[in-house]
Image (cartoon, rainbow, N blue to C red; front, side, top):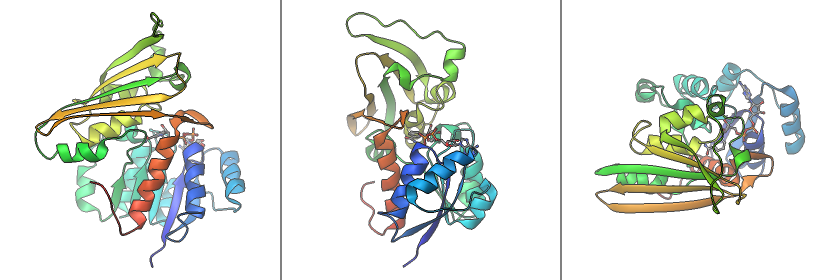
Length: 270
Ligand SMILES: NC(=O)c1ccc[n+]([C@@H]2O[C@H](COP(=O)([O-])OP(=O)(O)OC[C@H]3O[C@@H](n4cnc5c(N)ncnc54)[C@H](O)[C@@H]3O)[C@@H](O)[C@H]2O)c1
């Protein structure tokens, strides 16, 4: 049975969780062979958590060494990792999906025998959206509500004030625009808008609202899809990862499930 040689770019919350999954539940089908990380202490912390030291490599060296590369670092890194992996006919899983918007991968995708995986992340409905997209898809909307700390540090606030919380609901509309605009304004906070747009109507036609609320500790995502098939509404209420309030725990589980799907024969869902 084939064992995939896997490398991880980014040894933070997601990278470390995936490294643990690769060395435990997925170890019969995969072997973690190296990492790439700009902060060496983060790589050391990962090695300690999995109980094994691994080579710390450049992105180029890691791609060469692996069959399957995972990007869990930063939207700025994502296009480079995706391009390098596909050029070298490797499989690649991108977590910072927002970083892929605005770049065309079509020519590379047409030529490569590699594969590009973008997990559903912290939303439900990508499977049905892919089916709806086959014919007669008209509108895709994402309404995200997060506690203010989950939006902290976004480039959007360099040019915009945080809006005041209103009334009894304690909610504030922070942003309304396309998935492309959302990914640029909140690159670390709204990867779900990017995956939704890639699966549906594209980054310019996918509508996004971001609300902040003081009253909730969860990140919630409502997805509304309209087309010839009818209408879909999905709602996820996500607990943040204890290590990083910007990252939902479901996004980590979704990445592990995507790896499992890539490594095994059985593929359920669309
Ligand atoms: N697709 C989704 O649903 C989803 C969900 C949550 C997070 N994300 C994205 O996944 C990525 C990782 O999230 P996280 O919670 O693990 O973040 P994190 O901050 O905990 O970890 C990121 C790690 O990447 C490292 N890094 C940054 N730039 C690097 C570079 N150029 N080269 C090598 N290493 C680099 C950092 O030092 C850090 O250790 C982020 O971009 C985040 O926006 C995606």
